[in-house]
Image (tube, rainbow, N blue to C red; front, side, top):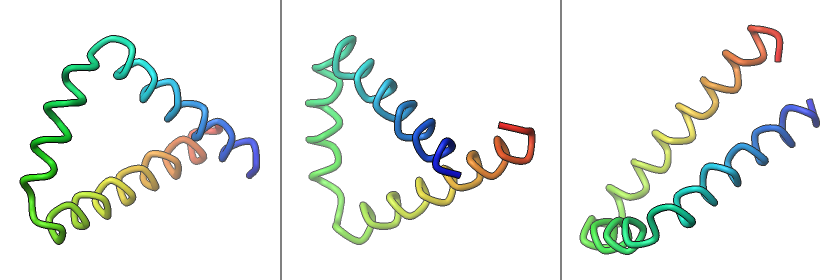
Length: 65
C-alpha cells in the first residue's frame, strides 16, 4: 500500500512539474480562471478530482500495480 502511495505522489509531482516547466503561462491563465469561480465550484471540482483519482488508483491496483 505504501508503494502505491509513493507511486501516486511521484506521478503527481512529475505531471505538475511538467506543466510548470513546459507551460508556465498556462498556469497563470488557469489561476486567473479559477479565481473567477465561486469557492463552492472550486470545492466541487476538487472533490470530483479526488473521486477520479481514487478510481484511477483502484483500477491500477485491480490491474496489478
